[in-house]
Image (cartoon, rainbow, N blue to C red; front, top):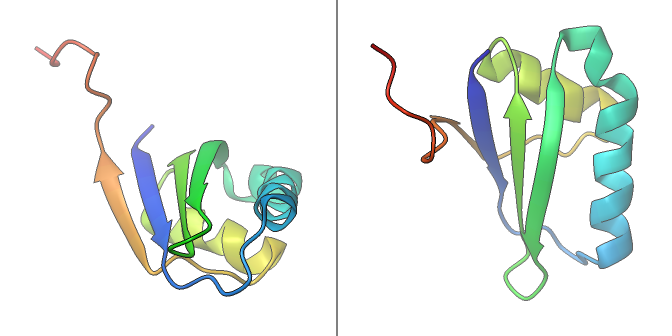
Length: 88
């Protein structure tokens, strides 16, 4: 399944608790869209959140955020994990 990294810019009032709560809400609804949120990172000073997700499409990944908490990512990129050998 494709792997995506999404980025949320200018998240006002970002806290440790808010980031954790949003991620938990994603986990609660992700099954509806065939998505699996794997991890997240954030920078409170810059107000940025980064989410790593396995999803059938960018749209499915965005739909989870939309339903879970309404904070849809500003950017979503398909990514490849660097330590995996290239496909033949």
